Image (tube, rainbow, N blue to C red; front, side, top):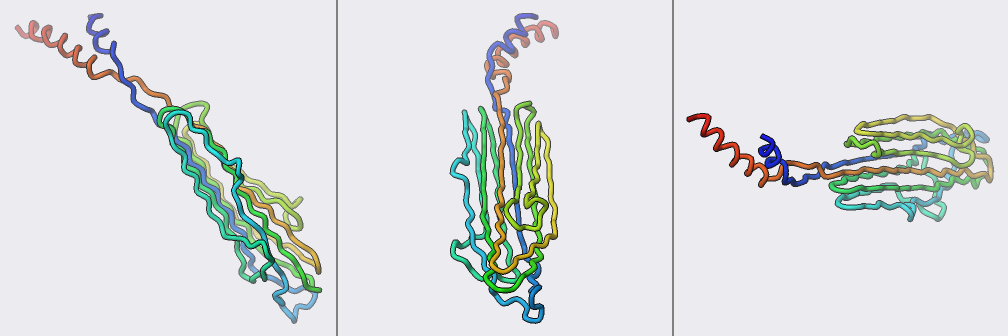
Length: 239
């Protein structure tokens, strides 16, 4: 009997046990109204301007040890460095999605996308700007390793934003085969007096780690040997 057991499992192959993570972060800033507080009858005189840039941190990268892949996707509305007249219905959108799959080995990712947005008041009037900030976060891990995780973060900071301390940050975190989602919409107000600016700095950040190790399975030759040894005993029993 001991020989049968040994023969059945003495030769083994390996199949990969994949581990994955995904993370998505989206942010939008939308102006809902612009009110001339100095001269309400005059309305908005198209004398507010915006400029900025959107980019990915050059240090963003994935380290793949073994067999695996990571697919990063960035999206966002282009921002011009030269000041442009601010439309009443101005909106800005920024997004990031990371999908990683470790087949045999590990994947380790860090990605950071950011945007600078400047609003300038070149008029002699004071304007009140009503705007909304929407965000959504989603992270998922599909593995059972205690080392695996995924985390996504959205943050906004700057000057004269109408936020407490001009700063806000939210994050979503998933550990060990779980998922986490967050979303919200905030209605805000900022005031720009003559010659004043409002500065937005928004950041989307993702970090994740996944590790997959081969899982031993009975080899085909070992199973064949087991069958050959069991067959004669089965035949004798029948006789």
